[in-house]
Length: 336
Figure 1 (cartoon, helix red, strand yellow):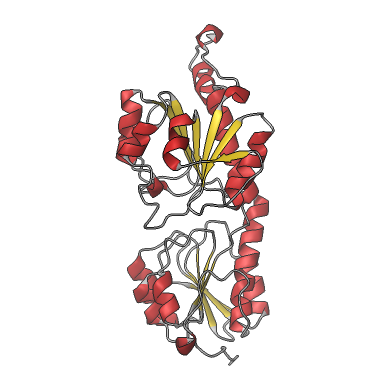
Figure 2 (cartoon, rainbow, N blue to C red; figure 1 turned 30 degrees about the vertical axis):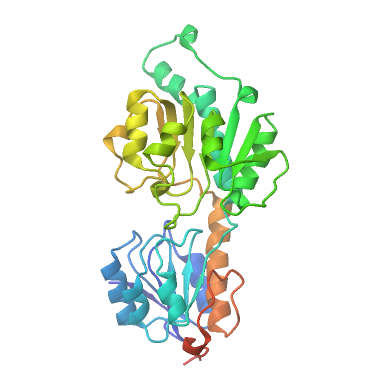
């Protein structure tokens, strides 16, 4: 059963959370006079979330990884906001929320430093053989003559997606003297030190490709078999955005054939399942933690909670990702 906290005003449902406690959420939500209930810490299935919404009739839903689909949104009559504890919105039925006059928010800037650090770290780990030689030495092999390492300054890095995090990654990589290429879906974005180019051109010219994209209908399998085949032989692919932006089978085949030298993935298409074709020594895997640090998690939890409080007090959210249809928008929740 959900954990129920300090019943008072309108209800806020926290569907799931990837941290040890809910102290920050409780403090901010309850200090504003609202009632917080939580689902299981690990994300539950869409049907479970819809059942929780129907049972508790929340005025706000906060979700980390759990899906908040159209059924869950329709299940709560007083619902006024669905707040994502994260950046991507692929687990929220945004169109349905918009149609029903419900705000959708996220926290787009809380982990820019962490994700860009992670991308740069993965690039360096590959170029300098850090992960490979760590494994070799621990296995009893001390063979420095086997090294086939790369001078980072001599590499060309292509960044797909130049939003906040992509731009920050470019800023950090400029310090290494690398040649930087960038591709954005909206032409006209000029970034100092980054040559803007078409996606196909970027893939053909880059030694390293870093993906910084949200998952949408337009970006799903953006890097498919055809586009992966365009990449330079011996190139390295880094994904710190969403797993389904890359066709996992096509990537596995490119690694198996030797077309790509390797990959570094913080995200997978069907998390937490790891395809067998990616369980190979030249693939660096981390469990969707690029966003994480003590600082980023505090900021995430605080900002998401503050958005909920703002909306339930009748104010406009600061990070709205939609414009709810005015005719359907609920009235501000009143304290009981």
